[in-house]
Every structure is written in C-alpha cells, then in structure tokens.
Amino acid sequence: MGQIQLKQVTKSFGDVQVIPPLDLTIKDGEFTVFVGPSGCGKSTLLRLIAGLEDITSGHIEIDGTDATDLVPAKRGLAMVFQSYALYPHMSVRKNIAFPLRMAKMDQSEIDRRVNAAAEVLNLADYIDRKPGQLSGGQRQRVAIGRAIVREPSAFLFDEPLSNLDAALRVGMRMEISELHKKLATTMVYVTHDQVEAMTMADKIVVLQAGVIEQVGSPLELYRAPRNTFVAGFIGSPKMNLITGEEATKHNAATIGIRPEHIDVVQSDGMWQGTVGVAEHLGSDTFFHIHNTGLAETLTVRAIGDISLTHGDTIHLNPRMDELHRFDAGGLRIA
Amino acid sequence: MATKASRSAARIMMAPAVILLLGWMLVPLIMTLWFSFRVYLPLRGGDQGWAGFDNYTRFVTSSAFWPSVQTTLIIVLGVLAITVIFGILIALLLDQPIWGQGVVRILVIAPFFVMPTVSALVWKNMFMDPVNGLFAHLWRFFGAEPVSWLSDASMGSIIMIVSWQWLPFATLILLTAVQSLDSEQLEAAEMDGAPFLKRFWFIVLPHLSRAITIVILIQTIFLLAIFAEIFVTTGGAFGTRTLSYLIFQRVLESQNVGLGSAGGVYAIILANIIAIFLMRIVGKNLD
Image 1: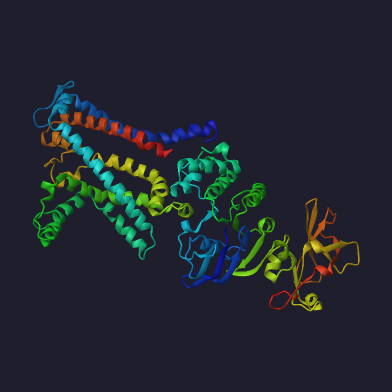
Image 2 (image 1 turned 135 degrees about the horizontal axis):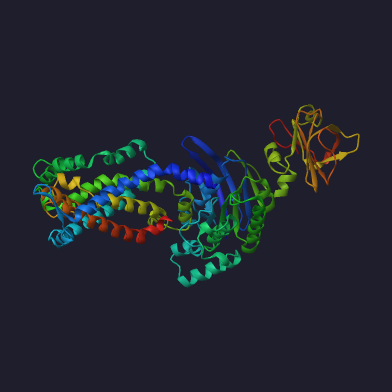
C-alpha cells in the first residue's frame, strides 16, 4: 500500500506562500517524479509529504488515513536525501540497521533484513566500512538500503543523484528503476533534471513556483505539453518556441517545434539560415541556427553525422503535424 | 616545499622561531630541575649546595602531598564534568533560532573575558559572602540559614567558580560543532523513527565527540594549574590546596625554592601521566 493524496495543501514561510493550494494524488506503486527548475517548490513539497515541514493548510492522506499531523516516523515513509545523510560514525551495517533498532526490532530480524537489503543492493563487500570510506555511488546505495529495510509504504527521493558524476548517474538511475520494478512500492522522486524524469517516471509532475503545470506520463508531456513552460522544460534539446509573424501564420501566439521534428533538406526548405554552432555527437548532430528570419535561434537535431559546420547555409523543413500551437496566455491550442 | 632548496630555506627561516620557543621552554625547565637538587633557602643563607634527592623525598613524604594531588584531580574532574555537560546543553539551546541571538551569544561568552582573580573576588564577595552575599540573602529570604560557602563547601565553591569561568569556552567550541552538524542527518534520523533523546544520543553526541575531546584536553592543561581562584578565596585552606598551590606555599611561604622546585617536577610528571591517559582514552577521536 502506498497511496498519497494531497488536498488543498499550502505552505508559507512567513508571508511568502511557496505552495499555493495544491491537489495531487499519487497512486499505489507508482513512480512519480516532481520536476521543475530550482526553487520551484518541489523539494518543499516532498518535505511536506515526509512531514519534515508542517503544512500551512490542507490535508495529506496516506493510504486513506489523515496524516497531516503525524510525525515523520509514523507516516511509514522512507526518504533518501540529496547529501545521503548517512551517519558518519556508524558502519554501513549499523546505518542500515538504525531505523530497525529505533523500531526496537529483534536482533535476528534486524540481521535478516539488513542482509537481505545488502544482497539486493550489492553492499556485502563494504558492509563493515564507515561511510567516509565509500564512493559517492556506494553511499547512495547505503542510503537506499537504509530506506528499504523499513519496508515503507512509499519511498521519497530528494535529488538523490545530483552529487554523482554523469556516468554513475546513468547507472544509478537504472538501479533505482529496477528497484522500483522489483519492490513495486510507491516512489516519489524529486529532480531538476528532465532526463531523469523522462527515463524513470510513470507519472511526471511538472512544477513551477509551487504550481503544478501539468501531470502526466512522460510521453503525454512530450506529445501534448499543456503550456509553453512544460513545452520548454520537457525534451532535450529544448523545444523551439517561436513567436511573432511565423506564429500568427498558424493562428497562434507561440508555436513550438521540437529540434528532432525539423528535417534538414538539401534545398527549398520552409526555413533557411546559417549554422552558428554545430555539435557533432556521431549518432546525432545538433545545429544552432541564426539568420532564419525568425526572432529566435533555432535548434535542430539531425540523425547521424551531417557535415555542415559554422557559417554554412542550411535548409530546414519542419514537420507540420508535429507543430505545437499556444495562445497568448501560453496555453496549448488543441 | 617541493624541492631540496626550498626545504632547506624553509628550515633556515623557521629556525629563529623554533630556537626562541625551545629556549623559552627549556631554560625554566632546566632551572627548575637544577634548583630541585639544591638546598636553596633565599632568606636563610641562599644556595647552600647539593641536596641530592632530599627535596624529592621530603616533598612526596609530606602529609600535604597526596591530599593536594587528590584535590587537584577532584577540581579538574568536577570542572570538566560541569563544563562539558552544561556546555553541550547551552550550545544546543544557543543553536535554536531566537530573537537577539547575537547578543545572547556574546553574553554567554562574557565570563571568559573576566580575569580569574576578578571573577573569584566577585564570587567571593558578592555571591558567597555569608553575611552580604546574594546567596545569603536568597537563603534568608526562604528562611534558611546562610551557608558559609568558602569554608563549609569549599571544594564545591571553587569548582563552581572555575566552572563559571570555563563554561563559555566549552560552550563556544561545542556550539560551533553543533552548528556544523548536517541537518539532513537529523532529519534522516527523524524519518528513521528516532525521537529527540535518541537523536541526541546516536547522532548529535557522536558528532560532538571530537569537540568534547578538544574541550577536555585544553581545559585539563589549564585546570591543572589553577591558582588565582584559590589564592583569593580560601588561600588553600579548607581542603582546597592543590598541587600548584602547595608548590607556591613551599616556595613563597616556606621560602624553600629547592623543595618547591622538586614539587614542580612532580607536577610536570603528574601532568604528563594525565596527558597520556587522556590521549589514550579520548585522543582516538582526533584522527
């Protein structure tokens, strides 16, 4: 079990309301990702769910019971922190056993659970070391281990991968996803990295200034962003958002076209311009294009290695069926 | 300091400071050792030649010696216990966000700036005086007989005065340690189901162990040598004669420099024994 429901939840720090009234349901077993730029309130929201911050008004229900006034320990949630928050003076084994010791569990049961967690996360080799002797990825595993031994109804992750290097981040991303499949427990994951959100989530919650901009599966958000903020935030490289005359042609205030939905053609493209920067990745080539007659610089993703470089003229054809249209308020026009 | 040339240059440049400090330490030490083997009575004929180990045996067989060692240890341990325990509690309180935090912190540190002689006199005359002291008034207010603190509870009084002086030091060091604790660790422990006291015991206290070690080591060094507080309050009477006070009495009151110097050498030995024990017990926290 692990259904979390937020009803009209708000949070203010002094006079500043960081989270205006907000409703959200996180279903049992779902991998939900809160994503948004820094300072958008996603970590605050997670801390409200965890109980580390008091909510100003509204209700939080966990598994149908009101948890608004419950202390963190009684909510049955486990949290993995950005800094891992391992206890530096305890060995890995003691770190993982700590929540069980606090729950006054039998020593034999503690050993059984710690060993099981160590096996799941491949911690056995360094179970008797101190956190200071571990690498970032290993510490991350220990922090997850400390969360899973409690067999919580939901896991909360607060930007757990942001302290890892890029290669390790990809690896840990996979491990967390696999762990979710294996445990089938609700997970709430906060990140500012939309790639993490897209690759891991069952459901993405896009936040801006404490307001939910859109909730949906990764592909729903990719295919049908509800507004220009979500359109610009989801997808890498970012969607081209074009305003002005070109948008008016399509009866919209803003039109959006993803870089991968613009084809590079030999001649007679709808747009043409000069290449500013060309990023050759081998599998793809990203072009940043100026002088197209549009107000904005265009980003184009072409498959394979295309041998155009700085200063070359490029001809482009957007796929009209992939065009997104937004009104003056930034909302999507169906 | 990578090359041979820069290493030797560094040595030459450090030499004056090292030689000065070494001299500063060695000259008094050697003089103490020298006098401790002499019969040296400044008012009764001055230096009267070689004494062998007479001074050492006389000092240690005097009936005042072992009680003075005991007194020294009781004062050191008492003050350490009070300053560490209350230092931790006050540090935890000062870490809470309160109005006027900066002013409160400076006020808490203030006793450390008061000279030992002055603070001991203030305590003796303003608080502990059995007739006019604040405590006497307080006791009488509740209808109790005022306590003659410095004669009836002499050790407790001295420990209280010295603790009052050293509490700010302990608080200050422990406060910086408390502030350096990662708040996410406490939150993690909270999520893990540890109530306040267990968070303190399992997370805060281990985090403070290094700071506590430093407080204990530094304070021990200074507390072994406390003198002014005893000099201006009890004058070594009522069982408050510490080893350093005994040495003072041998040298200045008995005018026996040789005997006092032998006591000084014993004090050095005692300090080293305590230092070794301390390093064994708490020093492992420092690596």
